[in-house]
Length: 409
Image 1 (cartoon, helix red, strand yellow):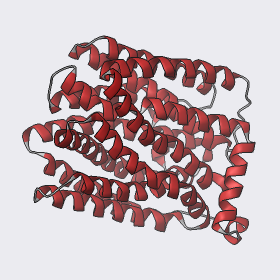
Image 2 (cartoon, helix red, strand yellow):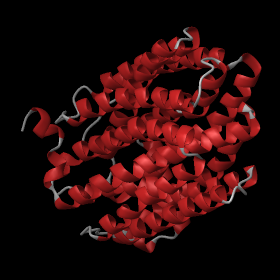
Image 3 (cartoon, one colour):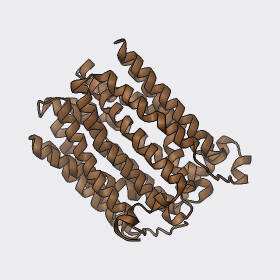
Image 4 (tube, one colour):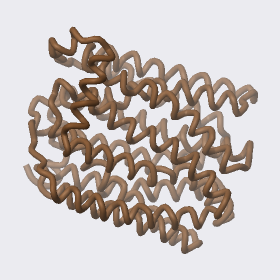
């Protein structure tokens, strides 16, 4: 297969055809909710530090639960876990909808529900990532499935914030949360329809949770390629994923604009990410992914620095396109390489470490970014983070060139 057909080849498998639209719809809802929460917290407090603090508290479950989630995924059947997780996501969305509908939401409510949401996400992210190998019959198409999942995420990042910004401006916050609830419901039924063969390794089934956790961590540390990929993801996420928290402040304080402009800015990042994910989905081998990782870091850095230096709406939109392009060009190849070289019986545990690097560092950096923005201003924060990311990108680019990535698929 070539061209467009090659980019969507994982859709020939029944399980992936069911999973793909569910992920696409639910991710749109999640991005609508993310924008709504960021705008709600800033509207209630007018404080970048408070926004960062809320995200910091949300990160706590990720660090506590995610490592154990990987062991659970490797020990227990993934299908039942997937169904349970989707039901809990629905419950969280319904609760925040009710609180905002009756106008009784407070900061502590948002923190509590954010902690609850991230308790679920602590299991969901590594579970979903490690399930892709069960959704395609030919392991050689695993990379395509991962890239298409990234496409879903990036289409959602394009549509979700834009829809969220328009809903906030014209209907209110409550509608955003209710729409998220409606987007999650179909995922429950689609996941139930999956037919997953999930054969577990006898060793991990006989181990305790702590023994399984120790084995997974030792394996990641002693495998240089996996360790380097995890460290790269952690650094990139720590710096790069601050922008969802920073952009509402940038929109209000630098561009002096409203929620619909925030939607367009976030949507521009989604378009850039979509371009990158479709390009990566069309790739049929691992060749060149390390160079793409390095190029992504450079493009992302230029985008961040441009946002800090140029304060017009049009340039900000173009810079956000570069941010999305660079981010996906870094994170998706990192994920693909990790899944290609990991031993299958340790996949859940390694992907749980991957989730910590991605989500946990993001929440901590949001707290730090809010603190820095209070000290030096939002524009200077973008410039600082862009320069630091560029330096780390160069360092990791050199490290990747010295390693040997051999696929086990």
